[in-house]
Length: 406
Image (cartoon, rainbow, N blue to C red):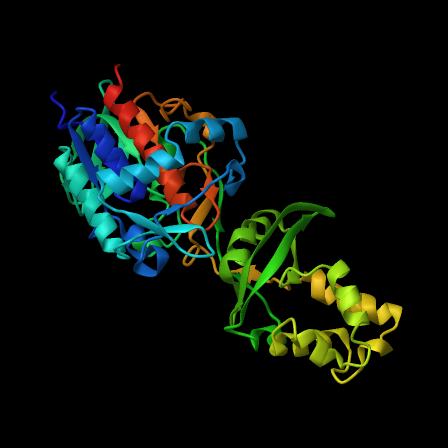
């Protein structure tokens, strides 16, 4: 029986659009299937609608996986960041500019819709057929390829399939976890999934009163008395708990491993605070500390220390000094939970890296099946890194699928 298409790409997000483009450029007859009412919905909401397209610089440790770090490095060598930046600047006509202080690259046009539209147009111009909406019920392997069963739509017979369905984060954009079920039905195991880059919730009313306050912190994730990661970024107090780049980046340590997050406000160390406090023996604690930290935060910290704000710095004894320094430099965030997949930017877990060929992203379980993007057990920190992962793996899967021979 004649097949409808050579390649079906399921999911028209960042990875799927890139897969369809490069598969079509490779000469294959491609159909791109999207279950939502429009393509690229996560692209549209990224960067507050401005689209944080890429990071300006990335390193291997900007990405997390429970799989092989060597495989991860190998995958990123297939399309280096500078080449990707050039692709968007010149081929997509999307020149970018770096946001001061963050290292994030945004398109100069500052409109996510323009990014989505240009990627979609490029895929269509390369020859890809886009069916949107087309909701996939199941994907089955046949002797000659795959049968894709649609919900209230005609089934499709194809030679090869690229799964670019995303994870479970922000399910209203179409990332509802259905891709994991498709992959499982085709022989893959699924590592436990969890919300990553997600705001954390806390029960403390005094900290909730600081809602809206943002400041730089040095955070450390501590697990079994060992620091597993340490970074400096901004923390945002919310009425539900904590958010901001620092908390989003640290959140997977809490959600996945139950690690403790210790915070140094404004990044100041004990070695910096000790001489500072000693030099201000006649000043009140409130005046001295609020010269370096927001006054509202200073008052909450002193209350938690059991210290009066009007107390002079010179009246601190050793024990009180140690308690104060702990609150200033090693403050344990009182985390109760997280906001879940509804607001998480990405999904942790998923299909293990060792179940795909790192040279092609073809499934080791089902020949002719390729996997890319968030469905794999990899995610990056906040700042355009997850788009970098989606684009890297989307391109590789699309090119490899177009070259595939039974």
